[in-house]
Amino acid sequence: MKRPILLPALFSAALPAALLVASPAIAQVTTNEDALPKAAPAAKPASHATSHQNTRNQHTASKTKVAPPPAKSEHTTAQSAASVPHQSAAQRVGTAPTVPSAPPPPVVIPPPPVKVPLHPPVPPTEVKPVADAKGSIQPRDNGVRILFAPESADFNADMLQTLQDQASKLAKQPYLRITLLSYAEGKPDDVSTPRRIALARALNVRSVLIRAGVATTRIYPRAIGIPPKDDNPPERLDLVAEGAVPVPTSQAQYGVDSSKAAR
Image 1 (cartoon, rainbow, N blue to C red):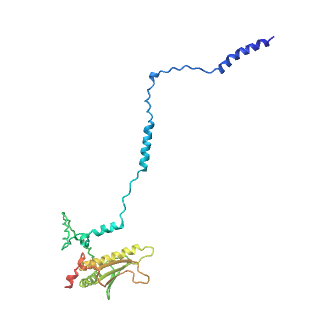
Image 2 (cartoon, rainbow, N blue to C red):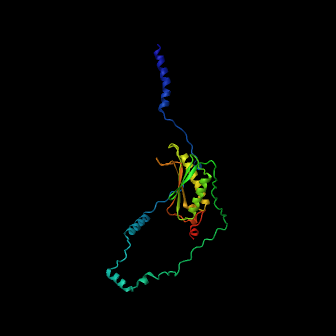
Image 3 (cartoon, rainbow, N blue to C red):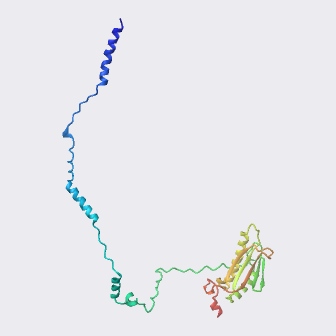
């Protein structure tokens, strides 16, 4: 009794859904042609006669070739060379440039507009005697040997007077080179201290020589410091006067000019 009632109800519900799925959707579109932009008119295709004429012109231009210039024969070249008159080397090169008879004058550099003041060099410090200084001076064949106290570069009155007398003699011999070999005792692990002491001794002797009239270009101080092994005494300065002076004494800052001393 219930089945005949359910079947008609199912068919009545499924039929409208099947119809909606099977039928296509339809939409209504309205177009306003006045609102659309107007397209440019299409170019007219070239006519068949014009394209054919262009093709013929290109074909004719490709076949046309520029003829090369006629080659000159050897006979023609020989005739043209024979027709040119012979020229000398001067005619071919041209006139030679003139050489001045005298060189140009030298360039003269004018002096500077501002005069630069020249300051004389500072003279060396005068060595003064020290009363309690210990030491002595021993004469040698080519100079003197000056003995100092350890760690000292001072001169007593007798040492200073003997050195001044020796410097006066050397001032009258302007062509001898004077070398000052200065030594000082010290430790091998500290070579700076004995070298400074040796330099002080050499500068004191140099000052005495310069004030006695010896040119500075003749004096060559050498602060050696620690002397070689078994070279005694260690506290000394050897003044050696021998050889020739490589620099003219006229170029010295102090001292007697060798040219004047020779007269």
